[in-house]
Length: 308
Image (cartoon, rainbow, N blue to C red; front, side, top):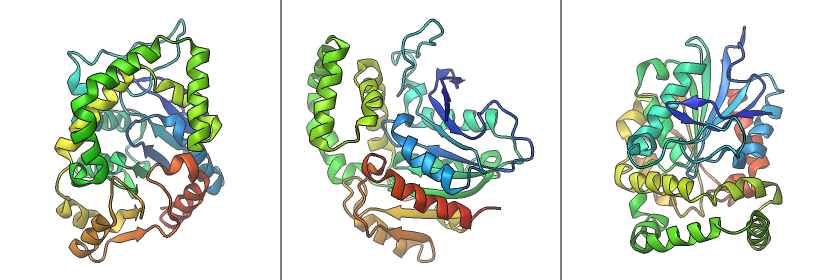
């Protein structure tokens, strides 16, 4: 695995790769796998999932994951590139800005003759669908794998209600908490996060990634994108799905506070012949925390099926 923070669309961006690094020549390689994360867009949460996919593909295809702009900041060091502040750069961190961020990345690093197996998790699935509307990007996409897809009516879901009706009015308290938390010594923050992980049964190897989510400036960018999702992700884009159904695979959860089972049924009613599956294993929306390997093997098998 390799990682760095190259500048993509004016924003230093956390990239993780298995196989070829983004700046290496792909030579005769004509296929790659790219994962677009959910929100928050921290690639560190996807390491087990994507390394499993890489193994499932016999390490033949490069596997890349791109974090969202502003959601992950490099640790302090002499060569650290600072994130542009949110104030005055709102367009970089909005939902539309995140879409352009992914367009910039693909245009810069993926040759036009290389086919992409595009994995979209949560809001990443929405961005993947939007990428299919951009001709020079769409031409490179072999297949899309939409995992627990937040592609419609987010504000009407249980979690959408909690975010907009309960958390939003008191977000100033959340900001205050994060600013106070940031003032604590690192060792204290680590122990608090560790205790939370024990209680929530979150794997301990995510401790470093979880610590990154304590940066107030990063949290505010995550929050800005989340509110924009509530506003922009409304009706199901049936026309786009029908036009691309031959290269779409949807996977819906049964215990998902962001994507109720009704959304799966509505999709099947609107596009009866679309390839959509309802999870029978009770995997959570944030599957990368507890079911990463299982999902990795499953998605790896799908990619093998749809290879060029």
